[in-house]
Image (cartoon, rainbow, N blue to C red):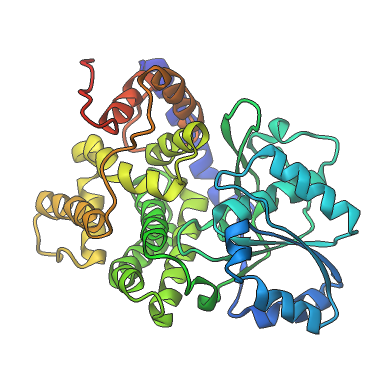
Length: 406
């Protein structure tokens, strides 16, 4: 990255860092069970509700308990279940039409990050009916109160139930972009382990590593606070203690509950401290090839950590202690290397590979441009890279492909 752009990025990031204490961040209120949702809706006088989910979750019957609880309490609802893995502007338009046609007053995002992102985007369109999602792209462009928004995560990974971001794919161009503003933070997060019990092992693994990526990128960035550092360390500790159990014994409610807590803590951390180039590259892959976000993050994470080099070794050493792969007496370089190796070992245990075979070489300049545009200047990464420098990660992810010389 050229020196002028570096200076601009760091100034931009420092302004946000110093403004952190004065910005209206808030954490969603936690609800421990779906059974508590109807009473809360009645208190808020919301008797018509839109549930946004996806077909797989609906077919598995995961929404049944919520639907029964609403029906038994006399609360009307309409369910939209066409959300795709990377939600599109078409998904938002369809769900928005249902919201208005049924005179809804609240929105429940039920599922993984895709359903919750779709729910947030619908809320934004309700709040700003005359503005397209594309016009809200970026930061602080919603600035209007959304309808009551409740998030029910069925995967312990995205952290979307805590964040101010909604990531959407343009249905025509396939460009994936984020909308970031404080009104998008859900008012309530329902952390009910029962809705995660039927999650398949591989999705349990990739979403768990998604949460790990959130915590790690938030911790190693340059805009941390004491609170976000604690949240990130707590998340890493819980993930290393519980993800293997959740993967091998999906019916273990305690492990599932702890993974939901880990995802929540990681979400609280990166909502304030942001993420980094792992996410920027992963988002471009999701937009172009529909690669699941958690999988892309899991594959990328060790590559990017190694590319940052010594600048993050001290922070990685602290994460290694939280993960239980090192102690406070372990030399910093050894602990940092041990943490990266522990991530690689975790990937191997879960059958997560090192490549994204969908990548086409001719797409790489466009993809790296998208990643650069997303990350710079917003993400307070340890080492700044421009589009040209980010290209190396795409080549690393291509099977049997040598990275071109710089």
